[in-house]
Amino acid sequence: MPGTASPMAETASEGLRLRVLSLNIQVGLLTQNYRHYVTRAWRHVLPSRHARENLKRVAALAADYDLVALQEADAGSLRTRQVNQVAHLAELAGFPYWHAAVTRDLAPFAQHCLGCLSRQPLQSTHFHPLPGRLPGRGVLEIALQPAGHEPLRLLIAHLALSRGVRAQQLDFLAGLVRPGVDTVLMGDLNCEHGELDARPSLTRAGLQALHEAHTFPSWAPTKSLDHMLATPGVTVLSTRVLDERLSDHLPVATELCLRLSAAQAAAASVPPARS
Image (tube, rainbow, N blue to C red):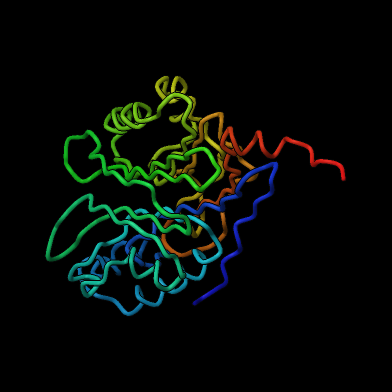
């Protein structure tokens, strides 16, 4: 396994810590300048040894996390030699649980998908198509609930390039947030922090951006397109953009602390009996 995963820490008083990574992997391609969008465009439709090697680097990074959200992966097609990249990364990085949701099926040439790798069981998974002029954008909804903790919902998304369509999609995502349920929205949202801050629906849902750092293009970042947002109940210990050039986007990493369930919290607050 390329790398050793850090164990998920837990104390009786603070609950389970969860290290989360989000990355647009660009189908495993390593784009290092704008010229590569033209000179390496063939790699989007044909298999590439370079893409397979770069996925090993992605797996080495992913292995240090407890949950990984993937955008712009492929679920198995001509361009990946029928390899499901989400399953492949789960195997390389030692994740026991994974899920891939196809967003745009261009079989046999491509199967665009969102993915999730997890060290915790996935309590439920659901794919929602996002509104837009063309099909192919969506959000993968994941529910986690480790024993003794409150549930956590994760929304993994890759949004449209059009600002008008994105507005509809952000409103749709805000509508998925349930009152009182800890929720994290993450992914390639294709917009700057200011656009998120200006959406009233996100504010009403309680979703707050966790960083403003630039993530695109990875070789000379000037735009903040990749985000993590969380509702107020989520305890966020840290969030940062990683200087790991594995695609044309930089990864975003955060560490969360899951809330103990009411029963577990009550038990943890009881002082030990004196002997």
